Length: 290
Image (cartoon, rainbow, N blue to C red):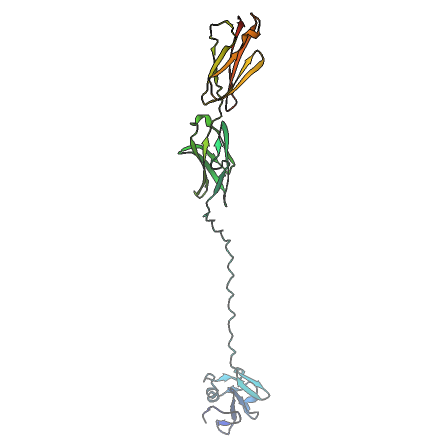
């Protein structure tokens, strides 16, 4: 009889005299203990082999598992290949992203707006930047007066006597970073050069050619000039100050020579002053002749 699927307790004869007894249980085909095939070395008939799904040609019993008088077709256990592990890539050292400089440097000068500049003054400045200041410039008005490299501080000596007195000067400092960004600060200052010119005093009387003076009230007179203004004057007779005056003059003093003996020498000195304290003077020596 043909072999077909069986449930766990069913049986079927294969061949005459029922020499082989097969049953099916979850895909396992077994031979009954009474089967002559339980003897070792027997050949499984092709009809049985076909029925249990092995090659139809005669197959040695060794192709069937035996145990306790039972045999089952060996179903190869599928071997799942072990996957070859994927190599872990060696990390490539990352290159730091370049710093994008978006901040403008700052710079501050030492001259405040509205300051007065006199004589020789030092202009200085300090600069800051998040990455670094690479150079700076100093501008006076529209002219560049100084250029510097590095981060500072920076300094420049300005001779204000080369600038018109009373003029306003715009002092601008500029700072540059490596990215080409520019920061600046500016202040307007006024030049007021120190007055270094002394006023000039001139004796009017006695006249330049006079050698003697005399009289109950002899008038000693003088005048003065200055590049700016004469603010006061003093008259000395000998080493004694005889009179003081304010303002630009002219100046006059009534000298009573009759109080002196004839032939008495008299040294007349006028001193004139400007607002800066510069002093000019004029001196003349005469004798008394009443």
